Length: 344
View 1: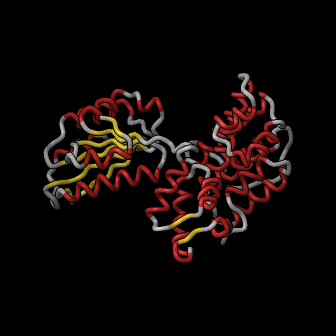
View 2: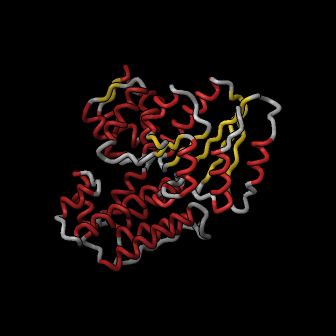
View 3: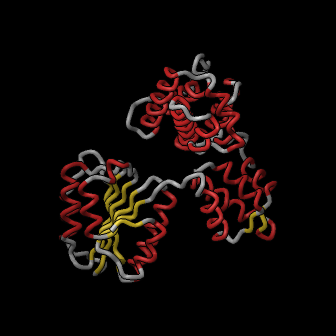
């Protein structure tokens, strides 16, 4: 069966399934789901755990051999198979479908798809695994759902937020749940009497760093390309991870492309921005940036975003920070050149 993460606890009350697939690109929600499954398994005596990470040249027979070998440490065990790309290949697809349908007793199989797009979701092996057990499909949290998600996370942390504080936090994190959780954890340490005001949120977000990825997101849309480069350099100097910077820039690139496409299809700019998840407070910046673009520059922007993503994730050789600089240029100054160089 296919379920959402919110339905997992209800399913586990009926007992463990022989196989679980957890797929989706929200790592925080995916990890929570995995922790819930593992905790339920430990409660039933699954004390041994073996993890396989599938990469180029992976030997799928090692998974089968592990299934067939009795554990020396526990009568019950968990076998986890991680698929960073979500694609196990022809051999792996057949193997996972076969194993799911013929699970040995006292063994729990968990398949983790770190990337889970529509093509993966429609794969035959996913359907067969879901039919044999449970597939937890994790969908991105939409802008409309973000306040509700934040409210639950805040409550779990034992905090009480002023309404404007929750809105400000939602604006700052803009859909990055990992960043949101980090901010909530920080606020739990500094909030007096667990009460959080908008001023405290603003202080927490900016505290300890000269630049943030949120400042970069605003700077790259603005009219001053040199400032965007200064923020990018500052983030690197402060040791901010390239994947986090990539997330901020790709998000802006995706949003600009979405709004551009909708406007070209005849929608009003305000409606296009609302449907693309642009916060009202940022619509002026987005509109300003779009006026500097044309069809050619939007296509170039998509290419730069794809290149930066592949380099940052190791799929293409190159300097991650150099690619981020190119993406910064493609977003904010499509008709010009940003001077500067960021080496690997």
